[in-house]
Image 1 (tube, rainbow, N blue to C red):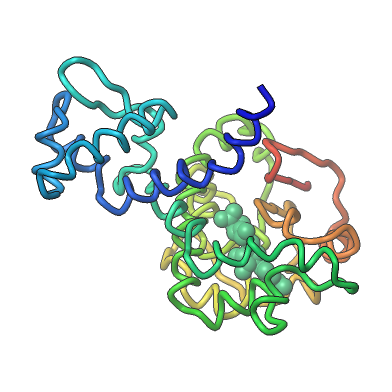
Image 2 (cartoon, rainbow, N blue to C red; image 1 turned 30 degrees about the horizontal axis):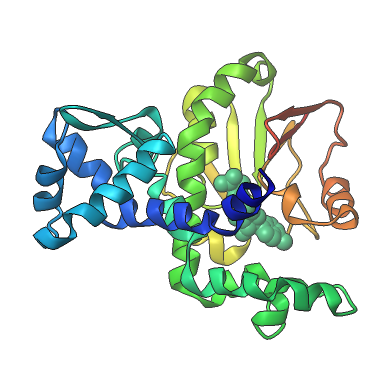
Length: 274
Ligand SMILES: C[S@@+](CC[C@H](N)C(=O)[O-])C[C@H]1O[C@@H](n2cnc3c(N)ncnc32)[C@H](O)[C@@H]1O
């Protein structure tokens, strides 16, 4: 029904913040620690919340069960493959939830129509944050920068093993690889560990690589991909090109040397050149 369509969309932020609430209360960790299906009252006392809030917690859990984040049987709540991704010792995707629900950034979306009506190329971010683009804001707001780094690392934790498995033959015969816009190096760490003879480099802006993982297995190079990208047999661009318009993407790709011979794409945000 059309009324449902509109309502599902205009209230979809409730699901977003229900997930954020589950992350903040570490419901995933508590259910895991319980070791068997966890009844509502046990969950409520473990968080802990006042007893008069138990039914509110029950409604929160019903929503999250409905969304496939948790499973429910008569005995109680259990983890699903989705909530396992949130576990800190798993992919830690709770870090991504904290980043996408950052209060100061969430509230700017209510001004989207203002940006559309305004002439010029300014993004929503630049309008609200005094002309600063996303990357400048991330640099100048260390708390947000850290959330961003952790979120990116969690996504790499969640998908790099599968990506490497899917593309194993592509890596054969490569001597070196540069992960352009590679953040703090989580993705390249997976590649370097899987292919110890491949010399890997993470390349990103100076303030980002300053926080890079310390590892013997890959090199760290600071720079600006619009100016110069270290040459390599393979250039790896994961979740980078979608941040830029067509002209900027062409500028980045022109800096990739040698020029790409082959193009591979795995899921939308992953691009690969060899
Ligand atoms: C969406 S993140 C992706 C990070 C990483 N590839 C991943 O998948 O986890 C985009 C990355 O591009 C980097 N970046 C933005 N502008 C850049 C530039 N001019 N030169 C190099 N890296 C840049 C950011 O610092 C950030 O780490």
